[in-house]
Length: 56
Ligand code: FES
Image 1: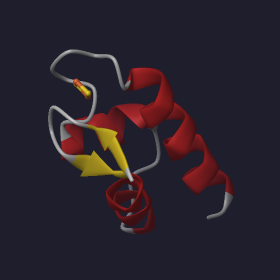
Image 2 (image 1 turned 60 degrees about the vertical axis):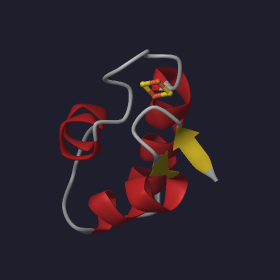
Image 3 (image 1 turned 45 degrees about the horizontal axis):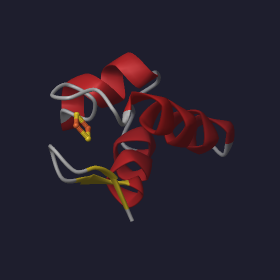
């Protein structure tokens, strides 16, 4: 599912960047662009990032 429509970032994309080494919401945001346009997805992006980090 898309988390961020502006930048077309899916939950799978976030899980992938975490698996590849991103260690914070800030790093996920920088690497994917998630949350950097309208900002409406920031809460969801952060939540998906935290879930992915918890599973690492
Ligand atoms: Fe993510 Fe707009 S939906 S920045």
